[in-house]
Amino acid sequence: MSVVIPITLTDSEYKTIVKESSEKGLTPAQYLKHKAVSHTEFEIRYEYLRKTVLKIPSGHVFTVMSIFSDWNSIERGIKLSLGRNFYHLIKRGGLPEIKAYGKNSSNIQLYIKRENKMMDYLGEKYSDNPIVNYLQYFKQGIHESEISLNERWRKENDLDVIWLDGDLNADTIFSVWMPLKMSLQSSKTYPYKMKGNKYYPYKDDAYQGKQGIIHFLSDIISNIDKYLPRNEWEELYQFAELASTISNVIRLPDKGRGMQKRGIIEIVDGKQIIVDSFYDQIPRTLYECFEGGEFRNKYKNREYFKNDKELKDWILDQDLDILFSNGVISRETIKPLIPRLTASESEWLSDKKDILEMLKQFNKILIFRQEKLDSK
Image (cartoon, rainbow, N blue to C red; front, side, top):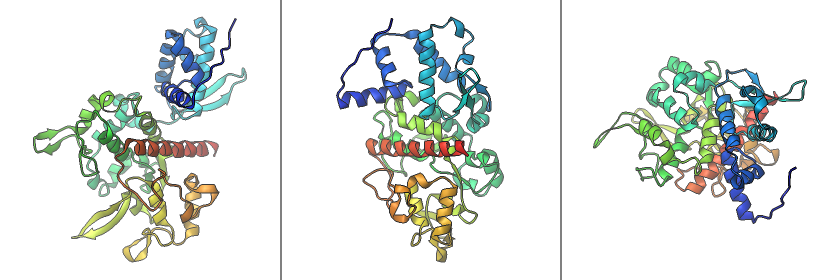
């Protein structure tokens, strides 16, 4: 026999439960049940399920039951909870590597493991922590200034180029390093407190500081749970998961590779210098692509689109229309990432609330693009 117990929650209580249940990968009802009634077997099996599916080869189709060799001996209620909660986890983008794949002839939900280029690239260094995976990825790279001079390196090591089979016009929509650095600087437990792109940490694992060599990347890996506890930075972890997928990759127009610099570049003393950074805030990038913007400035050799029609066609082709209000693609309808900024503005974020709001928008955009890609 089962009993249904209705409860009343305040808005504040409900928001807290939704946030905490999402972090656990559970529905609010399932979370409350397991808070009230300890169900260690479910929790252990659910965690095992989440970790095991990430190790499945790309392209492999599976069911929840196929993950457990002792499925027939599991209590029926736990089976149902595993299936229901895993399905909801996948549908809300909690595991971007996994896609719901219809049902089989027995009406059992199927899933398929998407390609995982990050796993392929890192090999044995790949882990179930998406932020650590990116830090390992950065450690295997070279200094950014050398990348543009080494096309072979990009084809072999740049994740966006790998996703597009060596196409050097590939670019990520959102880089991970910029919001990760903002988050670290805003974390109460990170030792370096100065805020801004010019301050620590650097994307370097052998930086010569005044007091000696600083291993920024290795230090963050070793202290990831201390510096960025998952229950406080869930949006960042989800973003790092999504960012390594095809949903975060676009193809720039043939003459638009200058957009990869994520800012306005000027020649100063014979060198290319970013004089106005966009800090990976794509509304500003799009704003400058419309008529009157800096990415239409033919006098400075950065006219990346001939006219607004060509730009709109590219936006639709790259599934970036989610960045515009009411289905209207125009300079005036670009949606900002956080309410207090307009599309024409970009700034280094230092307030944790702003950073989390930006990350929520990143995730929303990437989930939308993944769904569009899945439907094609």
